[in-house]
Amino acid sequence: MRQRLLLVLLLFSLSAVTAFAFPLLMSTASERTQQFVISRTADLDRFATLPVDVVVSEAQRYAEVYGEEVVVVDASGTPVVESGMTVADVSAQIDAALRNQPAAPVPTVMPWGGGDVLFARPVGTGTKVAGAVVLRASTDVAALDVARRWAIVLAGALLAACACVLLALVVARWLLRPLKELDRGVRAVAEGQRRTHVADTAGPAELRALSESFNRMSDAVAEAADQQRRLIADASHQLRNPMAALRLRVDMLPSNGSLLTEVERLESLLDGLLALASAESTATERAAGGVEPELADLQVVAHDRVDAWRAAAHSAGATITVEDRAPGLVRCAVSDLAQVLDVLLDNAIKYGGRQITVVCDRARLTVRDNGRGLSKKDIKHATERFWRGDDSQRGTGLGLAIAERIVTAHDGKLKLHTDNGLVVTVELPKEPLL
Image (cartoon, rainbow, N blue to C red):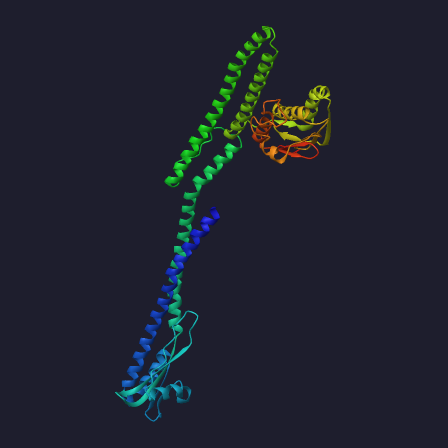
Protein backbone atom coordinates (compact mmCIF):
# COMPACT_ATOMS: atom_id res chain seq x y z
CA MET A 1 0.00 0.00 0.00
CA ARG A 2 2.88 2.35 0.80
CA GLN A 3 4.30 1.93 -2.69
CA ARG A 4 0.94 2.50 -4.36
CA LEU A 5 0.22 5.61 -2.29
CA LEU A 6 3.69 7.03 -2.94
CA LEU A 7 3.33 6.28 -6.65
CA VAL A 8 0.02 8.15 -6.84
CA LEU A 9 1.32 11.13 -4.87
CA LEU A 10 4.55 11.31 -6.88
CA LEU A 11 2.76 11.05 -10.22
CA PHE A 12 0.37 13.81 -9.19
CA SER A 13 3.23 16.01 -7.95
CA LEU A 14 5.37 15.47 -11.03
CA SER A 15 2.39 16.13 -13.29
CA ALA A 16 1.73 19.41 -11.47
CA VAL A 17 5.37 20.45 -11.72
CA THR A 18 5.48 19.52 -15.41
CA ALA A 19 2.23 21.39 -16.11
CA PHE A 20 3.78 24.47 -14.53
CA ALA A 21 7.30 24.18 -15.97
CA PHE A 22 6.52 23.33 -19.61
CA PRO A 23 4.42 26.47 -20.37
CA LEU A 24 7.02 28.57 -18.57
CA LEU A 25 9.81 27.12 -20.72
CA MET A 26 7.91 27.76 -23.94
CA SER A 27 6.98 31.27 -22.79
CA THR A 28 10.63 32.01 -22.04
CA ALA A 29 11.73 30.82 -25.50
CA SER A 30 8.96 32.81 -27.23
CA GLU A 31 9.82 35.97 -25.28
CA ARG A 32 13.51 35.74 -26.19
CA THR A 33 12.64 35.05 -29.84
CA GLN A 34 10.41 38.13 -29.88
CA GLN A 35 13.21 40.25 -28.45
CA PHE A 36 15.55 38.92 -31.14
CA VAL A 37 13.06 39.69 -33.94
CA ILE A 38 12.30 43.19 -32.65
CA SER A 39 16.01 43.99 -32.39
CA ARG A 40 16.81 42.85 -35.93
CA THR A 41 13.72 44.49 -37.39
CA ALA A 42 14.83 47.78 -35.84
CA ASP A 43 18.25 47.38 -37.49
CA LEU A 44 16.55 46.79 -40.88
CA ASP A 45 14.42 49.89 -40.42
CA ARG A 46 17.52 51.96 -39.66
CA PHE A 47 19.34 50.73 -42.76
CA ALA A 48 16.27 51.41 -44.88
CA THR A 49 16.18 55.05 -43.80
CA LEU A 50 19.88 55.86 -44.25
CA PRO A 51 21.08 57.85 -47.28
CA VAL A 52 23.03 55.96 -49.92
CA ASP A 53 26.33 57.64 -49.08
CA VAL A 54 25.97 56.65 -45.40
CA VAL A 55 24.50 53.17 -45.67
CA VAL A 56 27.71 51.69 -47.08
CA SER A 57 29.89 52.71 -44.13
CA GLU A 58 27.19 51.83 -41.59
CA ALA A 59 26.73 48.35 -43.07
CA GLN A 60 30.45 47.68 -42.94
CA ARG A 61 30.70 48.94 -39.37
CA TYR A 62 27.64 46.83 -38.40
CA ALA A 63 29.24 43.71 -39.88
CA GLU A 64 32.47 44.36 -38.00
CA VAL A 65 30.77 44.98 -34.64
CA TYR A 66 28.02 42.35 -34.70
CA GLY A 67 29.41 39.88 -37.23
CA GLU A 68 26.15 39.91 -39.20
CA GLU A 69 25.97 40.41 -42.96
CA VAL A 70 23.92 43.07 -44.80
CA VAL A 71 22.90 43.49 -48.46
CA VAL A 72 21.21 46.64 -49.79
CA VAL A 73 19.94 46.95 -53.39
CA ASP A 74 18.06 49.63 -55.32
CA ALA A 75 14.73 49.24 -57.05
CA SER A 76 16.31 47.49 -60.04
CA GLY A 77 18.13 44.97 -57.84
CA THR A 78 21.51 46.57 -58.34
CA PRO A 79 23.73 46.12 -55.26
CA VAL A 80 24.30 49.21 -53.18
CA VAL A 81 25.99 47.41 -50.26
CA GLU A 82 27.31 43.86 -50.10
CA SER A 83 28.78 43.35 -46.64
CA GLY A 84 29.74 39.73 -46.06
CA MET A 85 27.35 38.21 -48.63
CA THR A 86 26.30 38.89 -52.21
CA VAL A 87 23.00 39.52 -53.93
CA ALA A 88 23.13 36.05 -55.44
CA ASP A 89 23.15 34.51 -51.95
CA VAL A 90 19.83 36.10 -51.02
CA SER A 91 18.18 36.67 -54.40
CA ALA A 92 14.90 35.04 -53.32
CA GLN A 93 14.58 37.29 -50.27
CA ILE A 94 15.44 40.39 -52.35
CA ASP A 95 12.82 39.57 -54.97
CA ALA A 96 10.16 39.06 -52.27
CA ALA A 97 11.06 42.37 -50.60
CA LEU A 98 11.01 44.30 -53.92
CA ARG A 99 7.51 42.90 -54.51
CA ASN A 100 6.60 44.10 -50.99
CA GLN A 101 5.71 40.59 -49.83
CA PRO A 102 5.57 39.91 -46.05
CA ALA A 103 8.48 37.99 -44.63
CA ALA A 104 8.06 34.47 -43.20
CA PRO A 105 7.76 34.30 -39.41
CA VAL A 106 10.91 33.50 -37.47
CA PRO A 107 10.71 30.10 -35.72
CA THR A 108 10.95 30.02 -31.94
CA VAL A 109 14.57 29.93 -30.81
CA MET A 110 15.36 26.79 -28.77
CA PRO A 111 18.48 26.04 -26.71
CA TRP A 112 19.55 23.37 -29.15
CA GLY A 113 18.70 25.57 -32.19
CA GLY A 114 21.14 28.26 -33.23
CA GLY A 115 22.05 29.03 -36.84
CA ASP A 116 21.26 32.03 -39.07
CA VAL A 117 17.98 33.73 -39.91
CA LEU A 118 17.38 36.06 -42.91
CA PHE A 119 15.42 39.29 -42.41
CA ALA A 120 14.30 41.30 -45.49
CA ARG A 121 12.21 44.45 -45.98
CA PRO A 122 11.57 46.89 -48.80
CA VAL A 123 13.01 50.41 -48.86
CA GLY A 124 10.63 53.25 -49.59
CA THR A 125 7.43 54.87 -48.47
CA GLY A 126 3.87 53.79 -49.14
CA THR A 127 3.55 51.63 -52.22
CA LYS A 128 6.68 52.96 -53.90
CA VAL A 129 9.56 50.52 -53.44
CA ALA A 130 12.97 52.10 -53.86
CA GLY A 131 15.04 49.08 -52.95
CA ALA A 132 15.45 46.30 -50.41
CA VAL A 133 17.53 45.46 -47.36
CA VAL A 134 18.47 41.88 -46.34
CA LEU A 135 20.08 41.06 -42.98
CA ARG A 136 21.52 37.70 -42.01
CA ALA A 137 21.40 37.42 -38.22
CA SER A 138 22.75 34.64 -35.99
CA THR A 139 20.49 33.12 -33.31
CA ASP A 140 23.37 31.61 -31.32
CA VAL A 141 23.34 34.32 -28.65
CA ALA A 142 19.56 34.11 -28.36
CA ALA A 143 19.74 30.30 -28.08
CA LEU A 144 22.35 30.63 -25.33
CA ASP A 145 20.11 33.06 -23.45
CA VAL A 146 17.19 30.66 -23.78
CA ALA A 147 19.36 27.81 -22.49
CA ARG A 148 20.34 29.89 -19.44
CA ARG A 149 16.75 30.81 -18.69
CA TRP A 150 15.64 27.22 -19.16
CA ALA A 151 18.36 26.07 -16.77
CA ILE A 152 16.96 28.42 -14.11
CA VAL A 153 13.39 27.23 -14.73
CA LEU A 154 14.42 23.55 -14.70
CA ALA A 155 16.44 24.04 -11.52
CA GLY A 156 13.37 25.56 -9.91
CA ALA A 157 11.23 22.71 -11.20
CA LEU A 158 13.73 20.18 -9.82
CA LEU A 159 13.64 21.86 -6.41
CA ALA A 160 9.83 21.87 -6.55
CA ALA A 161 9.85 18.17 -7.52
CA CYS A 162 12.17 17.35 -4.60
CA ALA A 163 9.91 19.29 -2.26
CA CYS A 164 6.91 17.37 -3.62
CA VAL A 165 8.72 14.05 -3.12
CA LEU A 166 9.59 15.00 0.45
CA LEU A 167 6.01 16.11 1.08
CA ALA A 168 4.70 12.84 -0.41
CA LEU A 169 6.98 10.84 1.90
CA VAL A 170 5.83 12.82 4.93
CA VAL A 171 2.16 12.49 4.00
CA ALA A 172 2.53 8.76 3.27
CA ARG A 173 4.26 8.20 6.60
CA TRP A 174 1.59 10.24 8.40
CA LEU A 175 -1.20 8.24 6.78
CA LEU A 176 0.34 4.77 6.85
CA ARG A 177 2.06 4.72 10.22
CA PRO A 178 -1.24 4.16 12.11
CA LEU A 179 -2.17 1.42 9.62
CA LYS A 180 1.21 -0.22 10.19
CA GLU A 181 0.59 -0.06 13.93
CA LEU A 182 -2.84 -1.64 13.46
CA ASP A 183 -1.34 -4.39 11.31
CA ARG A 184 1.26 -5.03 14.02
CA GLY A 185 -1.47 -5.18 16.64
CA VAL A 186 -3.58 -7.63 14.63
CA ARG A 187 -0.56 -9.86 14.06
CA ALA A 188 0.31 -9.71 17.75
CA VAL A 189 -3.20 -10.82 18.72
CA ALA A 190 -3.06 -13.61 16.15
CA GLU A 191 0.29 -14.75 17.55
CA GLY A 192 -1.10 -15.00 21.09
CA GLN A 193 -0.42 -11.69 22.84
CA ARG A 194 -3.14 -10.61 25.27
CA ARG A 195 -4.50 -7.08 25.51
CA THR A 196 -2.40 -5.78 22.64
CA HIS A 197 -2.59 -1.99 22.28
CA VAL A 198 -1.53 0.29 19.43
CA ALA A 199 -0.65 4.00 19.52
CA ASP A 200 -3.71 6.19 18.96
CA THR A 201 -2.04 9.62 18.81
CA ALA A 202 -0.77 9.69 15.20
CA GLY A 203 -2.40 10.03 11.81
CA PRO A 204 -5.77 11.46 10.76
CA ALA A 205 -8.64 11.62 13.22
CA GLU A 206 -10.39 8.68 11.53
CA LEU A 207 -7.36 6.41 11.98
CA ARG A 208 -6.88 7.55 15.57
CA ALA A 209 -10.50 6.62 16.26
CA LEU A 210 -9.93 3.25 14.59
CA SER A 211 -6.87 2.65 16.78
CA GLU A 212 -8.88 3.45 19.89
CA SER A 213 -11.59 1.02 18.75
CA PHE A 214 -8.96 -1.70 18.20
CA ASN A 215 -7.59 -1.19 21.72
CA ARG A 216 -11.08 -1.46 23.19
CA MET A 217 -11.77 -4.55 21.10
CA SER A 218 -8.53 -6.20 22.23
CA ASP A 219 -9.42 -5.57 25.87
CA ALA A 220 -13.00 -6.75 25.32
CA VAL A 221 -11.90 -10.00 23.65
CA ALA A 222 -9.42 -10.74 26.43
CA GLU A 223 -12.05 -9.97 29.07
CA ALA A 224 -14.59 -12.17 27.27
CA ALA A 225 -12.09 -15.03 27.25
CA ASP A 226 -11.48 -14.58 30.98
CA GLN A 227 -15.22 -14.49 31.71
CA GLN A 228 -15.85 -17.56 29.58
CA ARG A 229 -13.10 -19.45 31.35
CA ARG A 230 -14.49 -18.45 34.74
CA LEU A 231 -18.01 -19.42 33.64
CA ILE A 232 -16.87 -22.90 32.63
CA ALA A 233 -15.05 -23.39 35.93
CA ASP A 234 -18.03 -22.16 37.93
CA ALA A 235 -20.54 -24.20 35.91
CA SER A 236 -18.42 -27.33 36.21
CA HIS A 237 -18.24 -26.92 39.96
CA GLN A 238 -21.83 -25.80 40.58
CA LEU A 239 -23.50 -28.38 38.31
CA ARG A 240 -21.45 -31.45 39.09
CA ASN A 241 -22.12 -31.34 42.83
CA PRO A 242 -25.95 -31.41 42.48
CA MET A 243 -25.64 -34.11 39.83
CA ALA A 244 -23.50 -36.25 42.16
CA ALA A 245 -26.01 -35.77 44.99
CA LEU A 246 -28.89 -36.69 42.67
CA ARG A 247 -27.05 -39.80 41.54
CA LEU A 248 -26.58 -40.93 45.14
CA ARG A 249 -30.27 -40.47 45.92
CA VAL A 250 -31.33 -42.31 42.75
CA ASP A 251 -29.06 -45.21 43.61
CA MET A 252 -30.88 -45.55 46.94
CA LEU A 253 -34.31 -45.83 45.34
CA PRO A 254 -35.76 -49.27 44.57
CA SER A 255 -36.69 -50.07 40.94
CA ASN A 256 -34.76 -47.10 39.68
CA GLY A 257 -33.52 -48.53 36.36
CA SER A 258 -35.22 -46.05 34.01
CA LEU A 259 -34.55 -43.14 36.35
CA LEU A 260 -30.89 -44.07 36.59
CA THR A 261 -30.69 -44.23 32.80
CA GLU A 262 -32.05 -40.70 32.53
CA VAL A 263 -29.61 -39.47 35.17
CA GLU A 264 -26.72 -41.04 33.27
CA ARG A 265 -27.99 -39.44 30.08
CA LEU A 266 -28.18 -36.08 31.85
CA GLU A 267 -24.64 -36.54 33.15
CA SER A 268 -23.44 -37.38 29.66
CA LEU A 269 -25.20 -34.32 28.26
CA LEU A 270 -23.70 -32.12 30.97
CA ASP A 271 -20.21 -33.51 30.29
CA GLY A 272 -20.69 -32.87 26.58
CA LEU A 273 -21.87 -29.30 27.10
CA LEU A 274 -18.96 -28.56 29.41
CA ALA A 275 -16.53 -30.11 26.92
CA LEU A 276 -18.02 -28.04 24.08
CA ALA A 277 -17.85 -24.89 26.19
CA SER A 278 -14.25 -25.69 27.05
CA ALA A 279 -13.40 -26.13 23.35
CA GLU A 280 -15.04 -22.81 22.50
CA SER A 281 -13.21 -21.20 25.41
CA THR A 282 -9.94 -22.48 23.97
CA ALA A 283 -10.77 -20.91 20.61
CA THR A 284 -11.72 -17.60 22.23
CA GLU A 285 -8.60 -17.64 24.40
CA ARG A 286 -6.37 -18.19 21.39
CA ALA A 287 -8.12 -15.38 19.50
CA ALA A 288 -7.65 -13.13 22.53
CA GLY A 289 -3.99 -14.08 22.84
CA GLY A 290 -3.73 -17.25 24.86
CA VAL A 291 -0.75 -19.38 25.68
CA GLU A 292 1.26 -20.86 22.83
CA PRO A 293 -0.22 -24.30 22.06
CA GLU A 294 1.63 -27.41 23.13
CA LEU A 295 3.18 -29.90 20.75
CA ALA A 296 1.82 -33.41 20.49
CA ASP A 297 3.27 -36.53 18.85
CA LEU A 298 0.46 -37.77 16.64
CA GLN A 299 1.58 -41.41 16.64
CA VAL A 300 2.07 -41.58 20.42
CA VAL A 301 -1.37 -40.12 21.17
CA ALA A 302 -3.03 -42.35 18.55
CA HIS A 303 -1.51 -45.56 19.97
CA ASP A 304 -2.36 -44.52 23.52
CA ARG A 305 -6.04 -43.84 22.76
CA VAL A 306 -6.43 -46.93 20.58
CA ASP A 307 -5.12 -49.07 23.47
CA ALA A 308 -7.62 -47.39 25.78
CA TRP A 309 -10.55 -48.09 23.43
CA ARG A 310 -9.54 -51.58 22.33
CA ALA A 311 -11.53 -53.30 25.09
CA ALA A 312 -14.68 -51.31 24.26
CA ALA A 313 -14.25 -52.15 20.59
CA HIS A 314 -13.82 -55.84 21.39
CA SER A 315 -17.06 -55.79 23.46
CA ALA A 316 -18.86 -54.24 20.47
CA GLY A 317 -17.44 -56.88 18.11
CA ALA A 318 -15.03 -54.51 16.34
CA THR A 319 -11.27 -54.39 15.91
CA ILE A 320 -9.01 -51.32 15.82
CA THR A 321 -5.71 -51.12 13.96
CA VAL A 322 -3.18 -48.29 13.65
CA GLU A 323 -1.13 -47.47 10.54
CA ASP A 324 1.97 -45.32 11.06
CA ARG A 325 2.93 -43.80 7.73
CA ALA A 326 5.10 -40.84 8.72
CA PRO A 327 5.98 -39.33 12.13
CA GLY A 328 5.02 -35.78 12.92
CA LEU A 329 4.52 -33.23 15.67
CA VAL A 330 1.37 -31.12 15.60
CA ARG A 331 0.56 -27.84 17.32
CA CYS A 332 -2.13 -29.08 19.66
CA ALA A 333 -2.33 -29.91 23.34
CA VAL A 334 -2.03 -33.64 24.04
CA SER A 335 -5.26 -33.60 26.06
CA ASP A 336 -7.17 -31.88 23.25
CA LEU A 337 -5.84 -34.28 20.62
CA ALA A 338 -6.74 -37.23 22.86
CA GLN A 339 -10.26 -35.85 23.33
CA VAL A 340 -10.74 -35.51 19.56
CA LEU A 341 -9.55 -39.07 19.00
CA ASP A 342 -11.81 -40.31 21.81
CA VAL A 343 -14.83 -38.77 20.08
CA LEU A 344 -13.94 -40.28 16.72
CA LEU A 345 -13.24 -43.75 18.14
CA ASP A 346 -16.42 -43.66 20.24
CA ASN A 347 -18.50 -42.82 17.17
CA ALA A 348 -16.77 -45.47 15.08
CA ILE A 349 -17.39 -48.17 17.70
CA LYS A 350 -21.04 -47.18 18.22
CA TYR A 351 -22.09 -46.51 14.62
CA GLY A 352 -19.33 -47.95 12.42
CA GLY A 353 -18.68 -51.45 11.16
CA ARG A 354 -16.47 -54.24 12.34
CA GLN A 355 -13.16 -52.82 11.19
CA ILE A 356 -11.78 -49.45 12.39
CA THR A 357 -8.46 -48.11 11.08
CA VAL A 358 -6.52 -45.15 12.45
CA VAL A 359 -3.91 -43.71 10.06
CA CYS A 360 -1.16 -41.33 11.23
CA ASP A 361 0.55 -39.41 8.40
CA ARG A 362 2.65 -36.46 9.60
CA ALA A 363 0.05 -33.83 10.66
CA ARG A 364 -2.96 -35.76 9.33
CA LEU A 365 -5.02 -38.20 11.37
CA THR A 366 -7.62 -40.37 9.65
CA VAL A 367 -10.20 -42.61 11.33
CA ARG A 368 -11.94 -44.98 8.92
CA ASP A 369 -14.62 -47.62 9.50
CA ASN A 370 -16.46 -50.01 7.21
CA GLY A 371 -19.96 -49.16 8.37
CA ARG A 372 -22.84 -47.57 6.49
CA GLY A 373 -21.33 -44.08 6.55
CA LEU A 374 -23.39 -40.93 6.11
CA SER A 375 -25.23 -39.46 3.17
CA LYS A 376 -24.06 -36.16 1.68
CA LYS A 377 -27.02 -34.45 3.31
CA ASP A 378 -26.18 -35.86 6.75
CA ILE A 379 -22.47 -35.02 6.41
CA LYS A 380 -23.37 -31.32 6.10
CA HIS A 381 -25.06 -31.46 9.53
CA ALA A 382 -22.85 -34.01 11.29
CA THR A 383 -20.80 -31.40 13.18
CA GLU A 384 -23.82 -29.35 14.30
CA ARG A 385 -24.76 -29.36 17.97
CA PHE A 386 -27.32 -31.96 19.06
CA TRP A 387 -27.56 -33.42 15.54
CA ARG A 388 -28.05 -37.20 15.39
CA GLY A 389 -28.68 -39.47 12.48
CA ASP A 390 -32.14 -40.88 11.80
CA ASP A 391 -31.10 -44.37 12.91
CA SER A 392 -29.21 -43.19 15.99
CA GLN A 393 -30.96 -42.86 19.34
CA ARG A 394 -27.85 -43.00 21.50
CA GLY A 395 -25.51 -40.18 22.38
CA THR A 396 -26.02 -36.45 22.90
CA GLY A 397 -25.25 -35.23 19.39
CA LEU A 398 -22.32 -33.21 20.72
CA GLY A 399 -19.34 -35.47 20.00
CA LEU A 400 -18.45 -34.36 16.49
CA ALA A 401 -19.33 -30.76 17.34
CA ILE A 402 -16.83 -30.88 20.20
CA ALA A 403 -14.15 -32.48 18.02
CA GLU A 404 -14.68 -30.00 15.22
CA ARG A 405 -14.49 -27.03 17.59
CA ILE A 406 -11.29 -28.30 19.22
CA VAL A 407 -9.64 -28.83 15.84
CA THR A 408 -10.63 -25.42 14.47
CA ALA A 409 -9.52 -23.80 17.74
CA HIS A 410 -6.01 -25.05 16.90
CA ASP A 411 -6.21 -23.72 13.31
CA GLY A 412 -6.91 -27.19 11.94
CA LYS A 413 -9.62 -28.76 9.78
CA LEU A 414 -11.98 -31.68 10.37
CA LYS A 415 -13.46 -33.27 7.24
CA LEU A 416 -15.96 -36.10 6.76
CA HIS A 417 -16.79 -38.19 3.73
CA THR A 418 -18.16 -41.63 2.93
CA ASP A 419 -15.97 -44.22 1.20
CA ASN A 420 -17.11 -47.79 2.04
CA GLY A 421 -17.81 -46.40 5.48
CA LEU A 422 -17.32 -43.10 7.26
CA VAL A 423 -13.90 -41.45 6.89
CA VAL A 424 -12.99 -38.61 9.26
CA THR A 425 -9.81 -36.66 8.53
CA VAL A 426 -8.18 -34.28 11.00
CA GLU A 427 -5.50 -31.90 9.74
CA LEU A 428 -3.54 -29.87 12.29
CA PRO A 429 -0.74 -27.33 11.96
CA LYS A 430 2.54 -29.14 11.59
CA GLU A 431 5.64 -28.43 13.64
CA PRO A 432 8.74 -28.80 11.39
CA LEU A 433 11.12 -31.52 12.45
CA LEU A 434 14.59 -30.23 13.37
